[in-house]
Image (cartoon, rainbow, N blue to C red; front, side):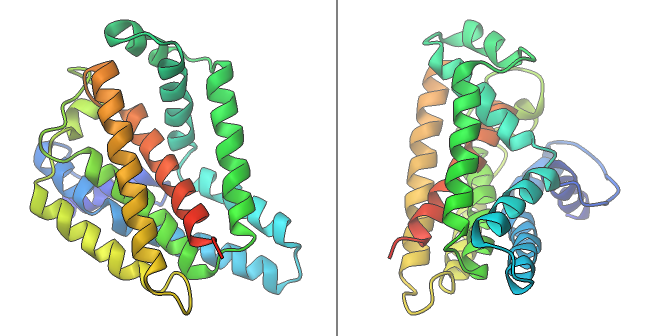
Amino acid sequence: MLDGVRLAVTTLSVLPVRAGRVDRSAAAVAMAVAPAVGALLGLILAGVHEGLRALGSPALVAAGVTVAAGALLTRGLHLDGLADTIDALGSYRSGSAALEIMKKPDIGPFGVAAIAATLLIQAGALTEAGPWAVVTAWATGRLAVTVACRRGVPAARPEGLGSLVASSVPLPAVLGSAACVAGLALAAVPGRPWQGPAAVAAAMFAVILLLRHTVRRFGGITGDVLGAAVECAVTLTLVLLTLA
């Protein structure tokens, strides 16, 4: 259990935690507790955002700094995964040809546009998001990892992060993590407790559609697909939580 928690923190953040054992059993725990790491990151980012606003920072500046801090706290890995996944999908190729595009070190126009749009939308939404909306969005982003690694979702390659974590999380653990995030989301929108859980549910529905498409095109998930799922879930959750 402890090795799994360490693996979750070291994989999903830059927080200074010494890595433990890395194997399939630790990976299963890590992917199941990923939303907790997301909630921790969300608390840090909510503190950054609210602190800047309290110091008199303009709303858009505080939002931009918060988004940048989120990228730094995750080494930009999820954004890189988003770009690689969108580049591969945008190529209209399938199987090994698409996976080869994902492995290239450069980023194509589709990937650049995806990163730019994602950061812009997140920053815009953060100008209206309260602190618990931030925590909920980042926890939901990591819930996407749990959902993506549920039993029955294959890995696209026999090596890499995807092969280690794919199909490692049993359904009861997925449902338990989802229930915890939905409970957290009750406080996301003051006066409208239903909006938070609804946003989480909608984000997970979008993630499932993304996963179905990537499994059909790539043959399974990769580490890049996990990153894309994270960024899509965070962005959609923020948008839905800031709807009036």
